[in-house]
Image (cartoon, rainbow, N blue to C red; front, side, top):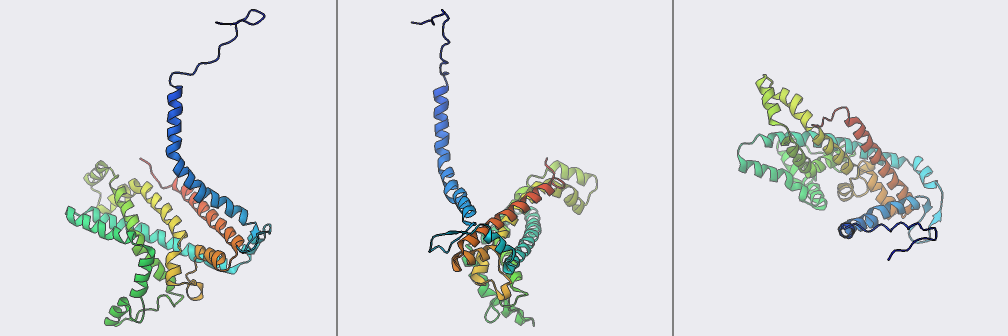
Length: 314
């Protein structure tokens, strides 16, 4: 039964739920249910610690007594900290060397493996190159610390057999960071190699064949066809490699525990660890962690900005 208002006008009926409204809500609930574990992990392990670091960077806290508000003192102390600049310089040098060596080495390895005709040999080489990447950093660091030991290491022994003397890799400030860069390349170039190998599969065969029919040499095909077609892959590898290299910590901590001779291998994350968990300066360490985040964000944005000039999307 319908009712009318005193003036005789019939009131507007309430909108009825559509036939698919209940099903749509159920789908939304199922979607949120599947999303909730990842969202919970993000809030607990990413967003939560980030907010805590931002707040804590304005406090002085030794993790034993209640924190004390210090304003921007931690940030002004960072400006006057020469060891922080040393750690940043080492990290930038390591990251630059890592990006260059990984891109060049990974690309050359991918080009070589991609030309192998024998499928069994190709699978073997792919596995051999990628295998070091699945080994833990602790095992890799201890292995190479033994191999490069100037007294009883295998590398020094064989260099001595050919009349060469091995440097004291991790006690010489001129060689310590170079040794870490080499170990990192051996351990992680397999990841870049796989990315490059996958990128090679995206190069259109018809473009390569057309270039060869026009008389282009292999070098010309590589420079004018293969590399432009792979530019999105190369860009992705550069971004990922820089982010990973800028957070390097494990080999420095295991091989050169206090940053090496004359702080030659002191990385910014290692410096953060020393301030936070050895000196118990949690507020200052939080400020340094924000600096690490801002540097990686800025460099990544610069990479994206520069990619517009050389990355070609098909």
